[in-house]
Amino acid sequence: MEQLRLWAVAERSPLYQWVFAILAIVIAVGSRAYLDHALPPGFPYLTLFPAVILTGYFAGTRAGIAVAVVCGIAAWYLFLEPVNSFALTPPSILALVFYMFIVTTDLVLIHAMRYALSTLEVEKDRSDTLAQANKTMFHELQHRVSNNLQVVSSLLKMQRRNVADESARAALDVASARLQVVASIQRQLHNPKRQTTDMGQLMRDVLPEVVSSSALSDRVVLDFDVEPVIVTGDQATPLALIIVELVSNAVEHAAASHRMTHLHLTMRSRGPEAIIIVQDDGDGLPADFVPEKSRSLGLRVALQFTEQLGGKLVFETVNGARVTLTIPLERSAPH
Image 1 (cartoon, rainbow, N blue to C red):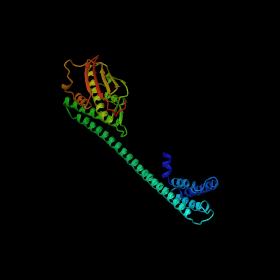
Image 2: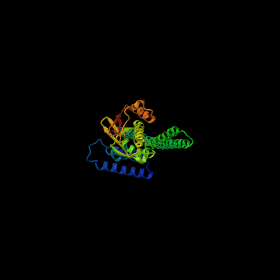
Image 3: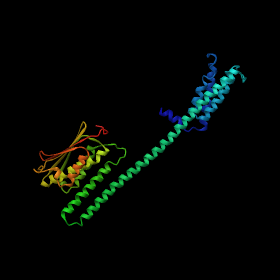
Image 4: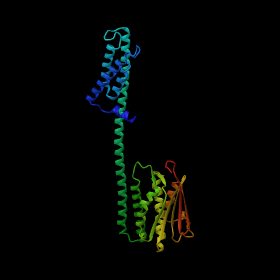
């Protein structure tokens, strides 16, 4: 069907049109003359109608009109009584009127169809051009957003040099690191055609950068045990930020024990839910730890995004600190 559509809207040279028309006339009239003795009376246009229709479709309206006129004259002379004559009788007049009505209707409909297909093709090309322009603009916007985040992060680092208070310096370090993470996620999720994201692969790309940006990165070993967890574009960014905050928090507290710390990320997709576990082999959580009362900005961010996604965070001390995140997967994301 697609090839037939392309044939209908293709531009044809005058040579092609007239060669096609001449061949159609010769084949139609010749085959009708060959079948003349085999056909009962009353079928003077049996092979002529298809010739007009095919010519109008494949060679254009002008060629179709030429075939209709020449074939009509040939039928009038060769196949209408009295044969081999242009004499007009009431039956021959009726037959010619019928012929003109049919071929005119066919050619008008074919011309209208070709015009509609040509218009559709123009609109399709225009839509493709606009889509490509939108894609380019989207890429440029995302690129600029990512670059701007990096610039702000660099400005915070520069400002840090002028701050003497250690807590303020630490806050600027954390803010700068978060901006770098958001910029990295922005680069990963910049494709406008991407309706879903594999969080397992995204975390493999992002988390090593998160760990390496920490001052304690030389004492942290990051392991992955992740399955493909497919989430929608709306879920991807908040979920990525939750995981980044949990890993950053684990790096900050577990590695502070002044020994090598193994940090393990597990991701599973289980039916309508995704399960993400961040596990370290440090000293575990304080006995009086209450997530909702924590003064850690990162942890508050994680809790807020978890609530936004309709998920649940569970903090445990099991061979170190373990945080289990469970979120529902939206139906539009293939599992």
